[in-house]
Length: 253
Image 1 (cartoon, helix red, strand yellow):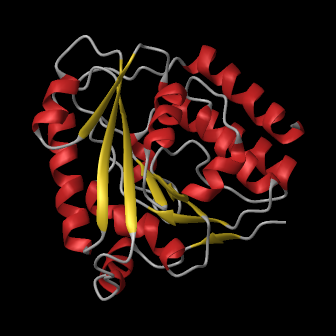
Image 2 (cartoon, helix red, strand yellow):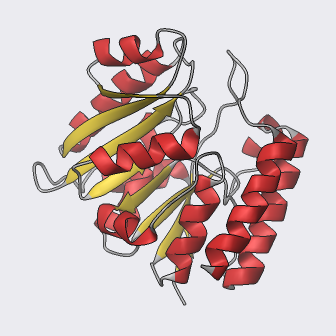
């Protein structure tokens, strides 16, 4: 069974420790950001992501996968220096899989474009992998954080808890945030997963398949800000059913 680690320190402690762990040029990191109509926030996210990776001293690329946006999301991301992949609107899972195919880095980070994730915390989700203590790290909104819980709608928290429980029951691993989109993963592990999800169920598919093939999976606390502009694209009922289906089928596959 895979190891599952939960970092016991707070975010500031982890960031401070990582400041002394720079490996300029020794590591290639690909950051994949799926986007669907996020023109207000995506430019800032790309800029902050690039700045963070520059400060880390790693070789990097920022891949923005535009999931058929009808606004200027793709153009703005490209103006800020991201490599933009333009795809028809097929869902977050399809966008991520497209980004994974194009990613050149040995490590891949995923984060959302709506401003809910802080690019400055990329070192947090990379740390366990850089220390060779994990192959896949999930940035948890709930590990050691009561404040984040109040920022997430109750229906989303309830659904997440259900998915955590089912995933834990099937895999034997305790999980606090199976639906977080802020993650780091070895590219070699992604290739072994044979992902097929098109929508939000991709997070569960990745996690369950990683655990099933014996990957070392870790969890680390992250900050979280509920979006202040635009609307969430997640449909609790429709997407919730797809996530449940993905958890079961990924376990059985």
